[in-house]
Length: 168
Image (tube, helix red, strand yellow):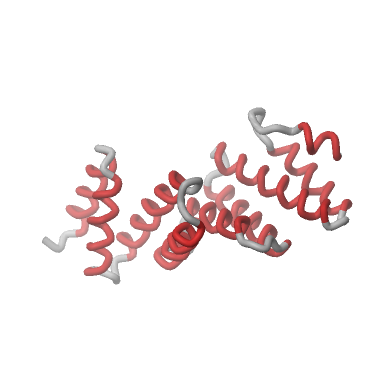
């Protein structure tokens, strides 16, 4: 059967039933056989992004990086893919200022598409906080204070503010 609607319906049913691994396997096979299907690539990127964000704390860094690269290849404009790529940038060792700048840009891009998403707000706040600390430790205190201020403005109530407030 070559009707993509049937394949997409099956993927949606599997996902709704909590069988996201099966849905991913099925969609990966579909994309391999129909690489010209933009709809399939977009849907696969979306499912992979959701999966990556679920496992980000348990995934080995190299596996997480490969997953981010796959998502970007499938759909460079996937909003949750922006979050996955931002996380990869902020985890890179040794940490570099430009990685944090790029990560913040990616999270801001996700925020444009998902302005009411609490997870995006939290990630943006954390990125500003972490970048602020990197700048602070590098004696770039004026820039650090700018990022701390953004963190304090964005941070939800359940994120610890004490250390930043004591420094700010």
